[in-house]
Length: 78
Image 1 (tube, rainbow, N blue to C red):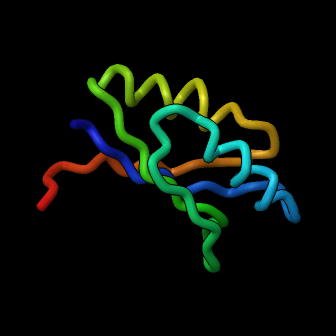
Image 2 (image 1 turned 120 degrees about the horizontal axis):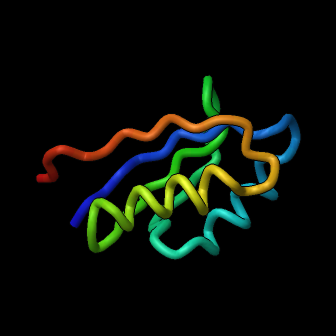
């Protein structure tokens, strides 16, 4: 099952709002606010790679107050 970790930067002070909306997105299995360069880390899974790309591109990246993302597609799970 295709999986990706998405690192998300939000507008200042909007981390909780973005996290709340992110958890409603189909395919987002986990999402946590973090300290550091990024504000949120999300684990996204889908049935196909095309569906995974669609979720990240059209659902996650287009959430209000998301400034930027970095997507890391999992190559191998253990």
